[in-house]
Image (cartoon, rainbow, N blue to C red; front, side):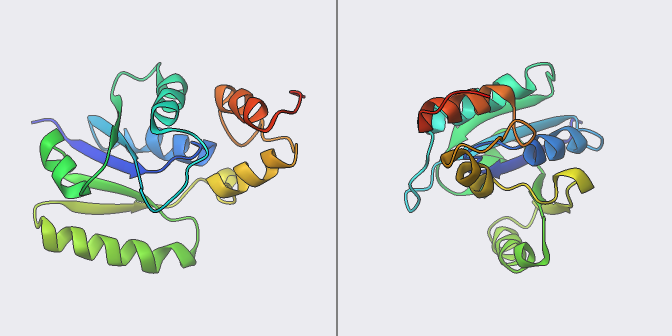
Amino acid sequence: MSRIALYAGSFDPVTRGHLDLMRRSLHFVDTLVVAVATNPQKVSLFSAEERVRFIVGATDDEPRIQVRGFDGLLVDLAHETGASMLIRGLRAVSDFEYEFQMALMNRHLAADLETVFMVPSLDTTYISSSMVREVARFGGDVGDLTHPTVVAALHAKFRYPER
């Protein structure tokens, strides 16, 4: 039986930290479904379609990673895809309280679904999508923080020349 995990987030934009967790997840699952969330309460820099395309481009050499957009309940998507596990990243202690509450709610909604918390690698701990957006907004170098396709899209979005 195939072990399928679901890794969901806004990925606005996807960072090296996200990509690191995706690749490391493959050590204990057969398939990782990366679910790009549409959150009506947030204004995203990139559309859901763009975010899916960025992740596909950054992971296209790994056939065990599937990328798709979604809205609605994560537990419903997990059941639809056959996932038995949710992957969540914890960069700092401050992430834990929110993630813990979400894990408990997901368990309440779907007792058969486990949440696995992963910590980032040391060299990606400080990277967040919001920091990448902020640095890029002011013309800073984000080349080491995300995939080259995303870097080019950020340059185009904020209209400054690539370095």
